[in-house]
Length: 240
Image (spheres, rainbow, N blue to C red):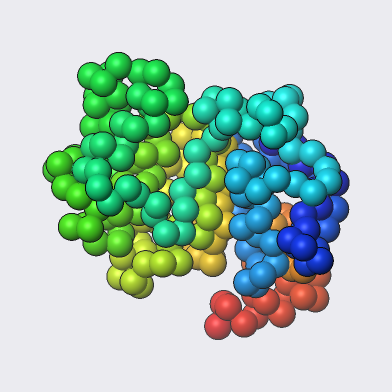
């Protein structure tokens, strides 16, 4: 579903992604871990073309992403769940959820409302449709953001540290929704520090540092017998 070939990304002189190669199968749940500044978020932002690769290719379902076609490809294939929710404060929850289906996918309002209410039901927030984001807790806002991603019914959902801005007691409610989503045939790429989630949900875990993939494997391999010394050191620090 996703092929990344020879991907490099520079911000000025800073070389953030260094010749990254990665394939993600349809329906695969890929979890990306690593220290801050390792290039994890930049990698998935390139998959959604929120960042344009400096060199290399991102190929979605056989089509190479370009500056010209990336909006059309995003409409058809991928949704992003951000760290900071990115909800429109001047719109109700329902308004936030129906915006993309109506504006980008040209759905009728009644159909968009029906899809939005079904998505809110799935994340346990159907009673919040008329609320504004500022009246919701952080965990509820992130669940709304996940519902918004579901509304476009795209086959790929990208998660950029979806729990890192939340108070600790709100993290689990968001992870529970993501665990449920992982049962479906959605291709998921998730940047996270939640190791329990990675163990439970991932088909494959990759470890990034300094703009490169240093280790990849199943959760079982990853958490019991990682080979790369930098990866072992990182896991030793965060698992204690």
